[in-house]
Image 1 (cartoon, rainbow, N blue to C red):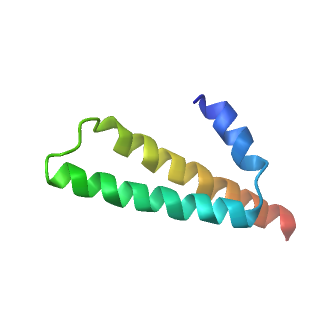
Image 2 (image 1 turned 135 degrees about the vertical axis):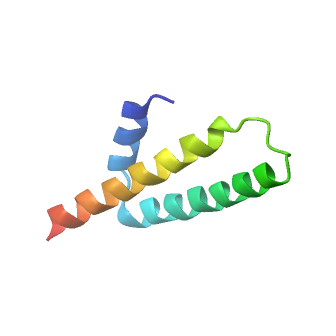
Length: 69
């Protein structure tokens, strides 16, 4: 998915949906790290992608918090 489309998709979500997305991404990152530690992970680039998506969600949450103040 293109990052600009993903970012626009995130901007259209509510805070509750973004928090849910954040929790899901953190769980996925945990699972990927576990798989990597046990040498079961095939695509190690996915870890980097998930980390960046977590940062994107946190950025959108921060932007929305600043706007709502």
